[in-house]
Image (cartoon, rainbow, N blue to C red; front, side):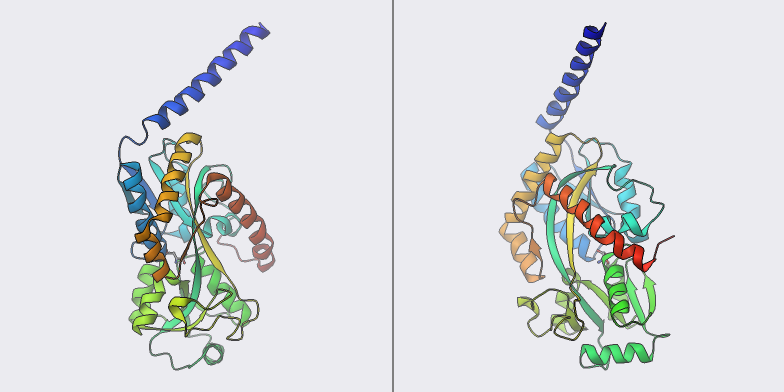
Length: 326
Ligand code: ASP
């Protein structure tokens, strides 16, 4: 009986292994959907579209972007957690995948149990920017203005768990002044309102702000990278501008639903590596102050390690702040 059971198990295991290889062998046979958990036109969307276009060429099938914004990226992530684990639904998310695991005490998915990993995509600094007609000439002046008008000064973000939310909270905590936050489904629409002067301040990825800063349609007060950026040479780092320790980098990763065959994730990771070496992608990333992940990081193991370490890193910070989404 024991032998029979062992044989049955071995056969079942072989069947699963075979089906996973078989699924990867012909994969992909049709177009793939990549969910971006923020609005179209924003920075996560920009990264996703650049990478997806190049990955599509390597895969021989189109990757179609679907924007599912809301609740700081958790709606889109929830959609992918519940999707079929067949390699035809992907998620491109950023650091919010890690922070929302603590910020939201009731998520409709388990961040560490409901996903598989494809690889890391890029690292992007943030910028502290304002509407164009903000009078302050430097970050010190902006902080003085914000403190003096704290009940009126608005800070746009993409909802709790978004990178802009995280950076905005860090800013308010650094200046020890709560300001009025205005949530959007992504910083694409938030940028439209910043350009129109309907909101005052935003802390957002360079992917969204570089062109506007260069064009003078918004004002930049700081970048959150350890060094100044080549594409924004005149913008000081937040530390240089007076905010000690204010450094934050936004990393992006591609995920699939739990149970997606390892061979499929590896195939996607291969396409991701090709995309990150694509000269067009590299050139666009460079223009936007974005650094593509290395070949070693564009892998399932590297993304898994990153997500786990980032959850562990942010958990005590968020718990200490006692700021939850519910
Ligand atoms: N930059 C946004 C954020 O704050 C997301 C986006 O719209 O891409 O996370």
